[in-house]
Image (cartoon, rainbow, N blue to C red):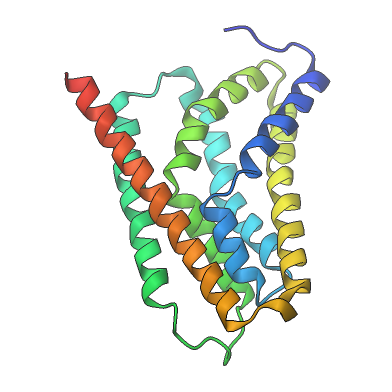
Length: 213
């Protein structure tokens, strides 16, 4: 495959590719909306939790997996397991929609764990890094470890800035958050988790059937 040989050009392309992914509504965006209604720093903490999973995965791919093609059965397993967990998360959110939450506001630990958990069970995140992300890492490898580390930091910084800004904006506008708005946000979160989960689960099954045909 052809590589970008100028590091500054490569890093610029990383910013645009990273933003094109993070700006799309997904599970992490949904959980940010949910937590930001209670804590201004929720977005930053969720991004930190996201980084807890993302940085080790990036370096693992850098040192090991970027040299190999991803087997079909791995993609299928990631889609089935991750999709199922996302659907479960959506169902649990729906079941707890009327649970009282004003007694104890969201803690820093809640937001941090939400970032870790939502990232870890998201098949889209894992498959992105095993496909598009791996291609970027293979390009970064030619520059060396220091430049790869800069690439990893820039990519994560895009996530951090986006979710931090989103959370602050939501928190500042919380006076508009009536009971109906809260219910609407909850249903949005449920829809995102279930829809994405069903999509990844169904896509994985279809991929398995196509591979066997």
